[in-house]
Structures are given as C-alpha cells and as structure tokens.
Image (cartoon, rainbow, N blue to C red; front, top):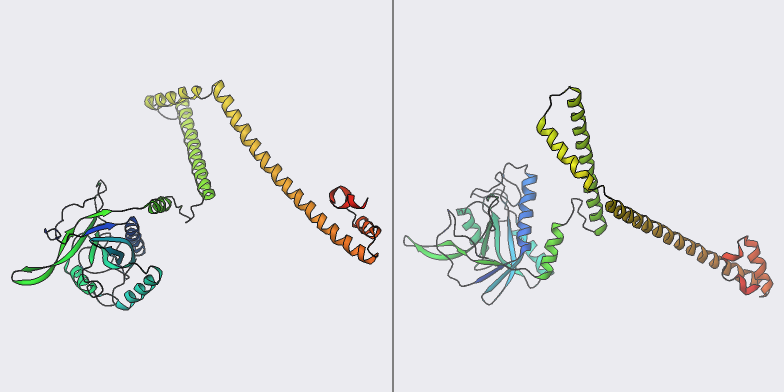
Amino acid sequence: MQVDPPEHGADHRASTSGLQFQLHPLVLINISDHHTRMRANAGGAGPSTSGAGGSGGGAGGGVRVMGCLLGQQSGRTVDISNSFEMQLAPGSASGIDESFLQRKMEQYKQTFPQQDVVGWYATGTELSDADMAIQRKLMDINESPVFLRLDPSCEPSRKDLPVYLYESELHVLDGVPSFIFVQAKYTVETSEAERIGVDQVAKILPTGAATGTNQLTAHLSSMHSAIKMLITRVALLHQMLEKMQSGELPFDHELVRQAAGLIKRLPAVDSQQFGADYTTELNDALLSTLLAAVTKGAAACNEIVDKCNLAFDRVSLKGGRKGGGGGGGGMGSTIGLGLPMGLLGGAPSFL
C-alpha cells in the first residue's frame, strides 16, 4: 500500500534512492504495544522516562517511544521484519544509550544472525530536529538508516495506516550541505505464518491465554452475562408496567407499544417445531454428558483391575518361592488377599 503525501513538518521531496521497503505487521504490533505500555505507565500525562523524550510533540499526553528496526536488505529491497525498544541516555533529550543499544544488538544477533539494524522508529505527530540528531547517531551503525514514524493521534475515521517511512538524503540548502528527511513508499508484506500469528494475537484473552478451552469458557461466560443482563432488564420493564397499571407511574404509551411489540414476537419461538428441536438438542447434550461419565467410570474400573492383577502377580510369585514353586502356594496367597476372584485376571490359571 502507498503512504499519504508528507504532512506538515516533513520535506516535500520524495525519496530518489529507488529502494523498495517491505514492512511486516509484527513491527507495527511491537510499536503499538510499546506506546500503549508507556502511556499506561505514565498515567496518560507527562513524558516517559524509558525510551521517551525528545521534541517533536509526542502524542498521547507527551509520551514518545523509540526503538530500532531489524531486517535485511536483498538488492534494492529492504525487508523490515522485527524491532526492539531503545533507551535514551540519562540527562539527554536526543542522545541514545549506546551501551544498552549494543547489548540489545548482540542479543538479537545471536538469535537472528541474518537480521541487522536497518533503522529506527518513534511516535510523534511531526518531524523535529531531535529526530535528525538521532538519525545521524544511527549512521554509525547503518550508513543509511530508515526512520519509521507512527502517529498515535490520527483520526478514528481514517482508513489508511498512520505510519510514515523516511530516508535521509544529503541536499544543499542555502549553500550548506545538510541531511534532510525524504518520505519513502512502502508496502505491508505478510506471510502465511504471520497472518496466523496476528489472528492469534487478536484472539488472546485478557488473561493472556488463547487455548480452545479458555476461549470456550470466555464465550460461555459472556453469553451468561448477556442473558443475566437481559433477565434483569425484562424484570425492570415488568415492574414499570405493573406500576403504570396501578397508577404509581404516569402511563407511557410509547413504552407500552414497544413492550407489546416485544411480547408479540415470543409466540413465534414457542412453536411445536421449536419444542421438538430444543428437546432433541437437550437430549443429545445429556447423552454426551452420560457417555463421558460412563467412559470415565470404565477407565477407572480398568485401572483398578490392572492394579489388582499386578498385586496378584506379585503375591503369587512370593507364595511360589515360599512353597517351593508349587501352584498351591500361589492359590493360598491369592485367597489371603481377600479379593473377588472375578477381578483377578490371572486367577483362572490356578483353577
């Protein structure tokens, strides 16, 4: 997908490098999660102390987060597939904590040896001089890093992503060579595994679990809450109608018409076909529950029989040794257990 034209504060020149940028959904999820966590920790007001700061008007109560972009370049295509958070140096508005950055780069290099730092990201409404200062510092790692800006103050009705990608180019302005940001085009690239992962992340419950059992429990709990709320509102409506009938409340004709229309829908559900279908589904559910209970009981009985057979074999061996290996010793030991002969699978061999 193609990005919008540059907003206020960005250079109106477009990138002339000819590079093709592919942005993966995992990067957008990481940036959004980073900003949400920092905004929640800051209480929605004031700048954050970790990975935040710098001028440029961060959105969301002054919270501004930063991080590095990971990916790889193949020819003229730059693939941006991952990211990690970045901290600022204490007492500096634009300096980067280089020791933290080097440590994170080494850790990611051990896990993802094919990925390199291809740029950095930040949240904000517009570009600033501090962004260019950070860009120049990252040129020590990558000679041409890209800058991804996420605008968290976008309009809710906006259809495209509030994500902007910039490159830095050397231009002569007023006779002085200087680096400026130029906006680059990008496409959102997803693989089948990423689609499954994003779908799974979207289904994760507030408890952090996403298994089928927990999802079913959450679904049934939500249905129970909805039905409980419906019963409460129907009871409240019934009380209001009773008070209108007794004269305690003024008669509301519109409310009574709505209640009458609601009541007229009920007989359509209370039909003979509905009763037969409901009874069939109820019987199927009860039969499934009974079958599960019988299966569980059969498994428990089978486990008891296996334990009894194991105990019988051990006692028989001990009795055989004491009695010189004769069959009578084994029989006497079996009788001494006081167990029903029907539960002992090895008993018929001694009869």
